[in-house]
Image (cartoon, rainbow, N blue to C red; front, top):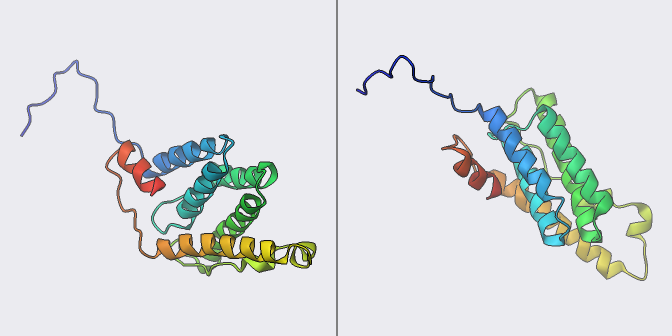
Length: 172
């Protein structure tokens, strides 16, 4: 056993709660969305969708509001139509997960993946000149959302071994 600390020593600092740590991770990811790069935008969306969809990584309160705002800002500010559609689909999937869990009364409940084609405005679906491009975009976004949701069935984040392990787990 280790000797007792001297009487004038500062009390040990307790580890941050997982909720606080989750909020900090979400905040860091959301700040990355400020980098104007299409690839970064997609990575941010993937990380946020993974975090919100996770059965063990809890995103609540302010962190959840920041996630919603970040997806909305990518939707409004991205120069890439694919990223705008991905942000819209990711946000829709996240809200589907959140409300499905609320209705089921369990944070462990799995929500079905959304159908991306249902999210497109009627004018986007019926552009005759760009039908192949729209279908490619729909396929990409559906694959993006489907892959994140499928990966959630194989990934479990149980405990964090510190800030470095938490950041690594959230970015995976």
